[in-house]
Amino acid sequence: MTDLTMHLTTDEIELWAQGLLPAARALHLADCSLCRVEADRERKVILELVQLPTFAPQPGFADRVMAKVKVHTPSGDWQS
Amino acid sequence: MVRDRALAEDLAQETFIKVLNGIKSYRPEFKFSSWIFKIANNAAIDHLRRKSIDTLSLDGSPTAETPEQMRSTSLQVGDRAESPLDQALSRELGTAIERAIARLRPEYRSCILLRHVEGFSYEEIAETLDLPLGTVKTYIHRARNELRGYLEDRRD
Image 1 (spheres, rainbow over the protein chains, first blue to last red):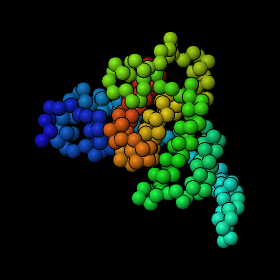
Image 2 (tube, rainbow over the protein chains, first blue to last red; image 1 turned 60 degrees about the vertical axis):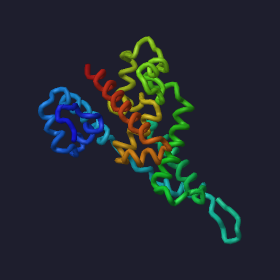
Image 3 (cartoon, helix red, strand yellow; image 1 turned 45 degrees about the vertical axis):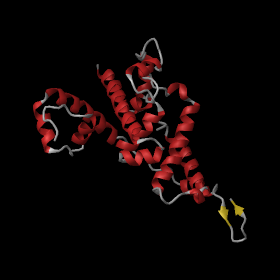
Image 4 (cartoon, rainbow over the protein chains, first blue to last red; image 1 turned 120 degrees about the horizontal axis):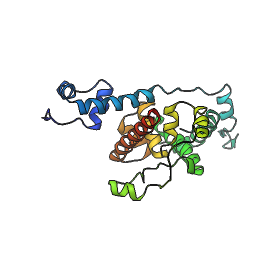
């Protein structure tokens, strides 16, 4: 059983940032200003990371890839 | 990972060509997506190593286990502060978090992006990058600490 006075580990802070911290450990977080400061700093970084933009490839990407893929022909040869 | 959309697309193209040309070497006991990410990660790391001077972490070897080892393997530079010109250039190169990620060593960058952008579990990252689980956790914790440091330096 976890000691309620123990500070949160980095794994537990990550769980908290994801809303997955067990209730017993959340009790410690509510009472511990050190852990709250640490958890808030960690959450800010994680939030910035998950908000990074993602990009789709430019049109024609698949065609450009397939133009360089070697295709195995029925005769056993490879062709580009 | 490489902070350049055109370059990222070139590396993605290279990745899919390797995947399709090497499909016979895929082993089905591994997740197909992990295999693709592994090839993509290798392509990105190869590229970053070729121009590694501007991607090195200042905080020592990624394999360092103790503060002493991290200190003894860290780079020594005179001044981490950016000049006004550097700051102006940096502003044109994306958000603060993107610039902070660019300062991470490639191994940390792969782990943190797979974890928090792609949503991989620690186990999936370990399998994808061929790293022990403990190493993946260490890299992610160090990467987040470095990112926090860079972002908080910028806010000060």
